[in-house]
Image 1 (cartoon, protein in one colour):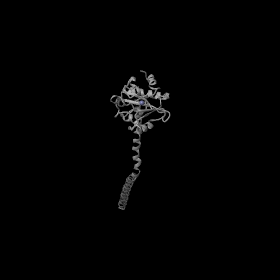
Image 2 (image 1 turned 30 degrees about the vertical axis):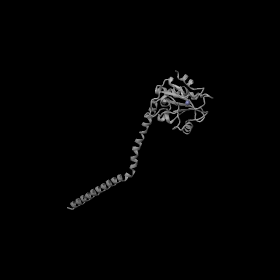
Image 3 (image 1 turned 90 degrees about the vertical axis):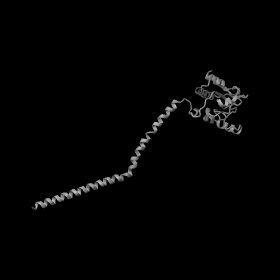
Image 4 (image 1 turned 30 degrees about the horizontal axis):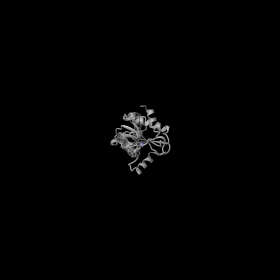
Length: 234
Ligand SMILES: [Zn+2]
């Protein structure tokens, strides 16, 4: 008989232990669960991972850039006109600045203030080492915007300003000659323009020999056009 109550007592103890065990398990579970909730404060670390993934995107873009430039031509990027405004050019007219020194910015100011034009009349200016580099090619707004020039007036229908590319070499070639680096840059630029617009060498003129142009001594007695054509071949 006494064994039964003992058994009951033990059974009750076991039940209590089980209940306590379950309670402890539930408490532990809630603690763990609550802990996960509190771990939400460290979520930015998890959010950080996509940042690493997004950082892997730029190299793909960087990789594609050299391919684009490689597919273009072997000339400075700024020589290439914006494709959405690029027009067809049919001739090239060479000028000298008739000044000992200068650069695109100086001529731009001169043409605005003295001639009352909307800016420098040429598409390109090639420096002589005075106010820009010796042989440095400066690209003007006319080329960048592909608008008509203001460098060779008097031609029928103003064709030379509308259809011809104006290149000015800094210097007065009545008193001096173009530098070797100017000739070098001029030939590289002319060659690029010839290929791009299929301009024959016969359509490269000194200002004074441009068909229909007003009388002028530009580009001087020591015109660089002769040397240019020797390099390009006729
Ligand atoms: Zn000229």
